[in-house]
Image (cartoon, rainbow, N blue to C red; front, side, top):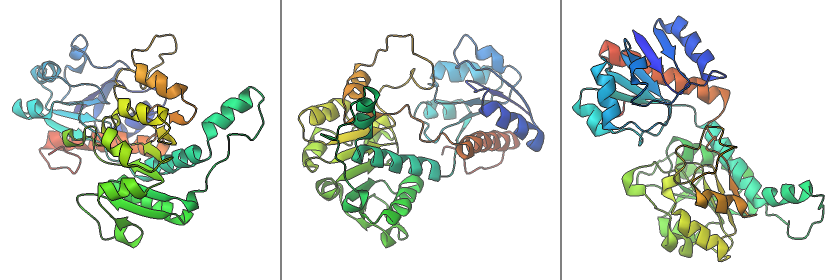
Amino acid sequence: MKIFAFALRPFDELGYLDALSRELGFEYDWTPDYPTLENAHLATGAQGVNIITNPMTPELLDAYRELGVTGLATRSIGYDHIDIAHARAIGMRVGHAAYPPEGVADYTIMLMLMALRRVKFVFRQAAVQDFSLAGKIGRDLASCTVGVVGTGAIGSCVIRQLAGFGCRIIACDPFPKDEVRTQATYVDLDTLLAESDIVTLHAPGLPENHHMIGADQFARMKEGALLVNAARGMLVDTEALIGAIEAGHLGGAALDTIEHEAGLYYLDRSRDILPNRDRAILDALPNVIVSPHMAFYTACDVEAMVRTTVEALLAFDRGDTTPYEVL
């Protein structure tokens, strides 16, 4: 079998893919370029195509299918960038990545701590030699109530990690887990918003979750509360978030992902004028942290992202089932 990988990073992913090709016995080729109709021909002779968070339109899927590609896998947990219905209609199986939750969970808690201790403001002032204390007082995580929205693999891991800090933990999820109940109390979303000092989002990027946190939800949150989002940008109405922060109702936010980030991450856009004014506004606010969607970025997780998507494509080629298939 041959796999063709698009948007493959030579400084980390390529090494893992090369090692897997020897371990699992498949051929591969790759390009650092993102997939387009103009370079679709690069996948000629491959049965599987491996991508990252690149939009997979019906036209692009058709182009791959005409070349004989029968499987597509994205090196991300989310797959909302792929037209799944069209892929199924043309007989193309789709897979996605899985990786241990600890990397994102650790990063989420780091964002909480940075927001609580006003690290962005402290570091900005230190850079101009303002070492005063005024306006820089922080809060202890142990004194907070943390509300976890979504208790899947990552949300549950966040709860396990938070338990060691001694904070009160509440959670909401349409499918509660018994193991989570040992460390957190399930409540409805309105109760969670009203009682939490920190709200952290770990819900999937499904259409029904679009803007699940908007103006009404921000109004229900405690004065001075913090929002953390290391899940999907589309969960939060960015305009409403900016309004809640500018009004002084929210104490701040720590965001690893925002709306309309396609075409920004993971590229060097340092010389470009970016068409994302919301990001510029958020980045300018002293009480908002915006990181470039990299909570996943650990050696363990990157290796797992490459491995699980390769295993999915190999299973597709054999006609086998795989836990990494989008069903």
